Amino acid sequence: METRQIQYFLEVAKREHVTEAADALHIAQSAISRQIANLEKELGVELFIREGRSVKLTPLGKIFYERIKQVWYLMEDSKREIREYLNPEKRTVRIAFPISMAAHTLPHIIYSFRTRFPEAKFQMSNALYYKLIDGVVNGQFNLAMIAPMPNLEKDKKIKGDILFTENIVALIPLHHPLSDRPAIQLRDLMNDPFCVLPEGFVFREQVVQACNEVGFSPNIAFEGKDIDALKGLVSAGLGVVW
Image (tube, rainbow, N blue to C red; front, top):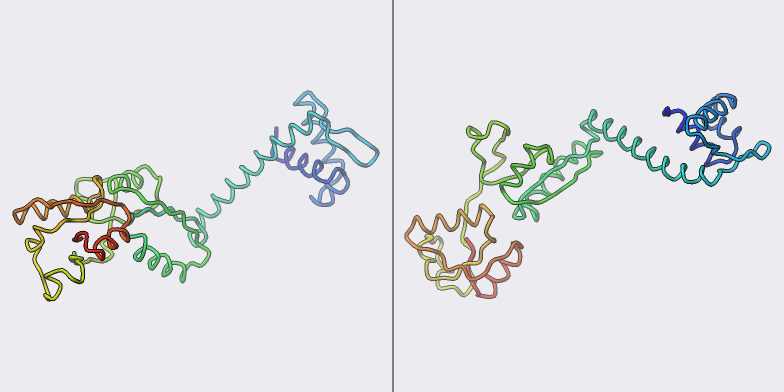
C-alpha cells in the first residue's frame, strides 16, 4: 500500500467522483483509476460501486475509509511536527517548571520569547524537582525551569545556565510582632507555625534544612501546593512562609 494510493482513495471517497478528484489533485483520471484498482487488488475487496462517472463506497469501503482517514491524519501530523522541529521559530517547545514559577516567572519568560518568535508554540507541564530533571534527560521536556541548580558535575546528561538569582524572604502577617522590623533572622520565627510546600518539593527541604542549621525544627502547621493559598493563610494570621 503506497502513500499516493491512500491519497487518491481519500480524495475520490470524499468527492464521490473520479474526475473531480483528478482535477483537485492535478493528475490524470486514468492514474487515479489505476492506483485505486491496484489498492483494491492488494486488499482483495472492491472499495467503490461505480455509477457512471460517480462512485460510492461499498460497505467495506466505508470501513476502510474511516480507518485509513485516521492513519492519513496521523501521517500529516507527523510530517508537520518534523517541519516544526526543523524550523525552531515555529516549533513547539515542551517546557516544564515547578509550581512556584507558574504565576509570574514563566509567563514573563514566554512573553519575551514570543516577541522574538511569534509563531512558536508552548506545551507546558509542572512537576517536582527530580521529575523535572528526569523529564529533560529522557526527552519528555525540551527544557525545565528549576531551582536550585542541579549538580551539573555529578549529572553529565544535562546542561544548565543560571538565568537569575533571588533572595529568600519571610512572609509574615501584617499584625505580626516582627512586622515593623526592616529585617529579621530565620531564628526569630522559631515559635511561629510554618506554611510550607508538601514533601517532595525541594524548596520545602531547603526550609527545613535552613531551620535545622540555626537550631530549631519548624512547626509545620499547613501544607499545600498552591503558593497563593499559602499566602492567604499567612494573611489570615495562621502562619508564616519563608
